[in-house]
Image (tube, rainbow, N blue to C red; front, side, top):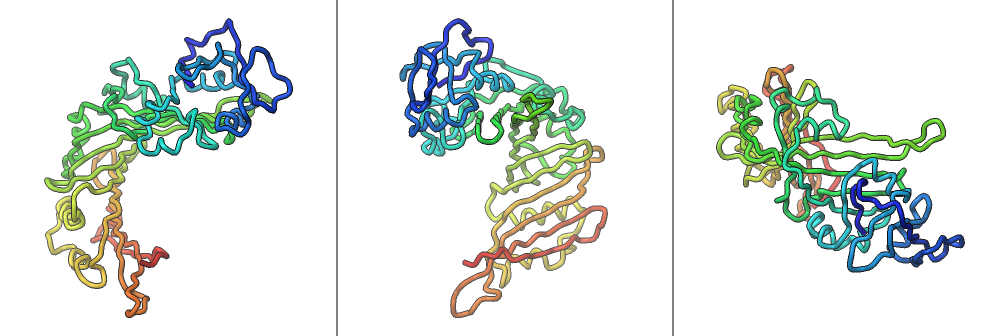
Amino acid sequence: MAVPPASTFATDERFYIHLSSEKNKKDPYLEVDDGTNSGTFISKLPDKTIITTSPPVPTAATELHDEDKWVEWLKQIDDAANSESPVLNKTFGDAAKNIGEPGFNDPRLYLGLKESDQMEISLVKAWTWTGQEENSIPDILKGLQVTPDSKLAPGHRNALWFNPEASSRVTVRLVFNLGDLGTLNSLGLGGLNISFTKADLVCRKVVSAGEAEGKTVPVTHGDAEISIDCKFGQDLELQGIMEFTEDIISMTLLAKSENPIPRVLRWLTGVLGLKEDDLGTLPKLFSQDPFKDVRFRRINIVVDKKEIKPVSFQLDVQVSAPIGQDPASGNKTLFLLSYTYISSIGGLGTLRGQKSGYTL
């Protein structure tokens, strides 16, 4: 079933879709068995009814009537969405096989968003659509234009989710391509030996039903972040997200390169202006027993937005070691090791470990 933009909703004809258990049905109507996916979804709607402009047919999209309560609620979002199989397959990739007709996987309805004809919009407009303040955007990025990313691979989740059981919560995720990497690289992070190779603006908006003065009102919140591919130095490739507040830039990154830990430590040495041996035994620690089996988890770096200098840096790795295990068992205990550097404290940073609670 398709949900067209509000401007195309017809107002002259009504066709009702009722549950088979509904006693007070309005004509003309179609009955839906309560035990089907469609019936389960309708049973969770406030009026337990859907109003369309014509009888639904399996080979074509059906428009919802503008008096339908669900349509009235979706107007809070004002985006075109579709639950046809080809759209869901492109939007959710392999995960779409778990989504039954008509895009319903209890308790949520999944809809892929149609591609927009609009070529460009301002980054500020997309950012503030989520409810985020404009002053959280670095000044250098405010003049940028972004484009709907029509080349997204299957599974991109450019979509709308509707959960009637959670205060009629509607979640929209929109992805825009940030084509001007030159401006992003002009943020000043080049001084930290960081360069960007790809960037998308990811916007999320959530609307839930609240109550004020006895009336149902929309309660909205959202967030915006930049999905990035980047390089630290010449040979360390990472991908993750970049988030902004009024004062800081925060990046949480996963590695694309193999064996990233030595490269991360080399990058950190250069950024902090240290000599190779200033980090002491830290590089050797990850190549000796009991910490030979090390797996990279993530990097988090926080940068002062005005001065473009590191506020903090954290490297998380997972280590499996036979500590606390019977040597004859061959079992290993998993640990999370975190190396943290905080600029206000200085020094060489701290290394902390904690047991994960899992055994291999």
